[in-house]
Length: 248
Length: 193
Image 1 (tube, each protein chain N blue to C red):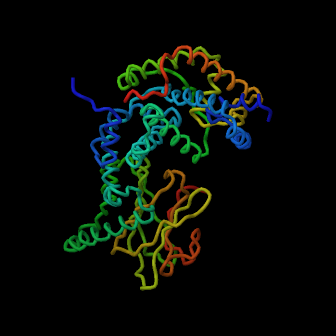
Image 2: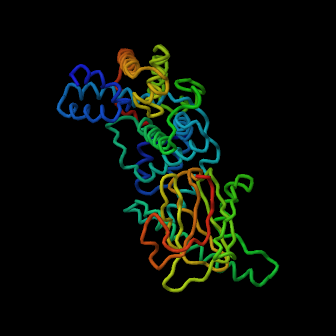
Image 3: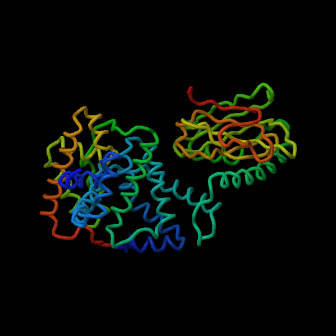
């Protein structure tokens, strides 16, 4: 591009409006042009201030309490203050699942004393109801594979907080060299959500959502060898159950 | 009148792990952060998520704010805008549902929180934007708040690419010229807001 064309693109570059090919060529020329860099700095100061022109609207009142919960949640699995980077999502999920398994095991044992009391919801499901209210929870039944027809349960999700839990019963017992693996069907790929073992009669699985809940096509659990499927994007063992959300 | 600690002081406390400092900043700025998120996303649930992500980002990266590079509020809201545009791109939608660009509703929500100087700057900028031809203002808004490129805007508005490039260039040049003639102070100075 000629120099005038290059200079004419400075305002659009400051806005972030250049197409990809244009941007690459622009940046290559900018690196060696002090005059252009100075002009760009003026436009960038202007575009930074543009953010102040957004139409104002009051935020929902519950966001303050929500933030407190999020910070408390990040505190419970975070590294020491000297290193506040969050651990990978699958590690946070495993930590949460381990805590849930212990909590649920105790509650389950107490409830066995009363045979007419239904299996209690896990702590994560209870928290979902408390935060979202039952009217706002999305519920989808799990569909077991024929081989595991006794499995039953449901997915419960709160799109507002992008939180979802699968509460499932009668997962088959595992040998020492087996594991369950969670799968999340994103729009363009399937990804592993981690490995877990059943917690008892009822197992609760917190889904490590990396995308907004409504973007997922569904979730599933497969039975794998210890260590999980050798393919990070596809189950190798049999499907245990699935939860279908969208007709992909 | 009770003392309101400046944002820079609250950020320093956040760096030491002071959660109440984060919640104080949240209470002070959540309306503005939510406003920017909603401007981009036009969806309450999505705007809430991005607004909260902004403060979690602040919680994790308070040390990354450099007062020498500009006002805290513009730094914070720029984080929001970028998170919101990333969210839009993941949803594969980059076109607005409604025409709400540069409509100055509820200005008191801004002015109750901003310093006098920043509030004046904002009012001045809103006024200057209103003086631009509508098609230039529209192109600038689509690029800025929706992360649309020249080609995206041309396709969305169904006008030639060269027309959009001209609208953005001329609009921004006018904006800069009018803005520089009105601003007596360095817009990059930090007033401790």
